[in-house]
Length: 125
Image (cartoon, rainbow, N blue to C red):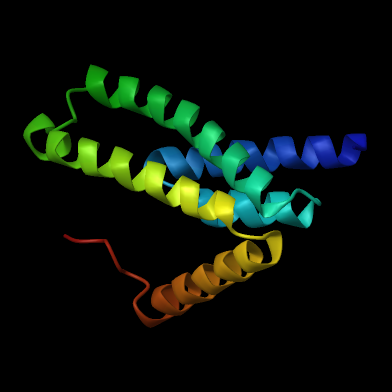
């Protein structure tokens, strides 16, 4: 891999890490970026999820320090979240690169449409 790719991926990682710590996810940027740089969709998803895990641990520590976590709300989501992650990882590993690329593209198009229709989705006053 050439140095320009490594530097570009590093900066994309920094930007998506900042975005992901604030919003909660950066996979819609990280995964396509890694695929564009030639990684298979399986490697791109695994790499992005691992990076996201460490990003989320750091964010979790900071939110905990500032007492910004509602544990009564968060705890019921943990077990189903783990189960869903295990199931979806198994399903994605059973798919071919071509099918997985199509699924990723479909989700990106859906997200773009949702954002264009309602750009304030998830925001409230």
